[in-house]
View 1: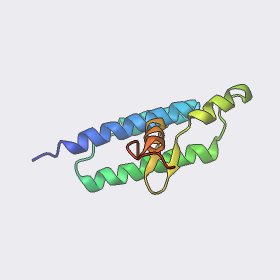
View 2 (view 1 turned 30 degrees about the vertical axis):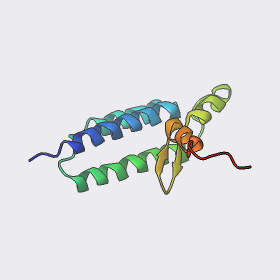
View 3 (view 1 turned 180 degrees about the vertical axis):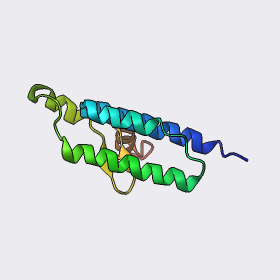
View 4 (view 1 turned 120 degrees about the vertical axis):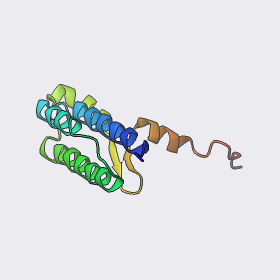
Length: 111
């Protein structure tokens, strides 16, 4: 029986990596992300975890090797679009950040 969760997670991982490569602004990063995404989908959960590690290693390498691949005038907009990495929660994008900032919305105000 095939696990339907693995293909969805693989697809999301590939999309996140492709978005990360776009924010880096480098053609080589985008090419690496495209090649990574064209691999066959993982057949098992441990294999998916290995691919997650590979994707994280790629993205971290892009940050280390080409921190500002864009021109000086475009560097500030590129830097603001880059995703942050929170060791406890993984990659934090703008949706994760907004969610964390609004939590808990149901608490009463402190007087």
